[in-house]
Image 1 (cartoon, one colour):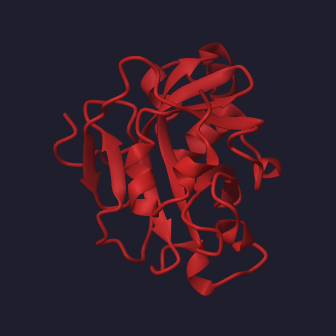
Image 2: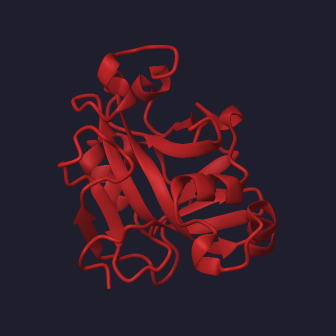
Length: 193
């Protein structure tokens, strides 16, 4: 079952841990979300911190849309816009445990090892075939959709830590990881295993 827009229409710090265990599906590939990070207009690591610009405008749009941007000029990173329309907030989907279409993921990534296919936001974007053309698309209608957790993933224990790969607001405990998952990006937070 695809998550409704109402799922995302609440504070980013509620949505980010709630997304653990949910499934991201694009075409014939899918994976279970095992790591997220929250970003909000109130803190300087967020693209929304500077206000509405051409790049950041989707962050202020309706909840339940994709915000896809290019990192380091290479990787397309997938985020889910949340909070009320007009509030700049999104959840960065940092890592997935591959679920379906693993052969396609391996071909796109040029890798074999399952744990490495989607263990970072750029990796999962490549594995799922996410591009900048998916920016502002509806996460309930597709082409990329986020679904409710499959059996066995309904109650994920979240390990909370500080966000990684940023230089501002690094002290905020806004990173959420599924306990025990080897697909979480490195460095692994304390207490993951």
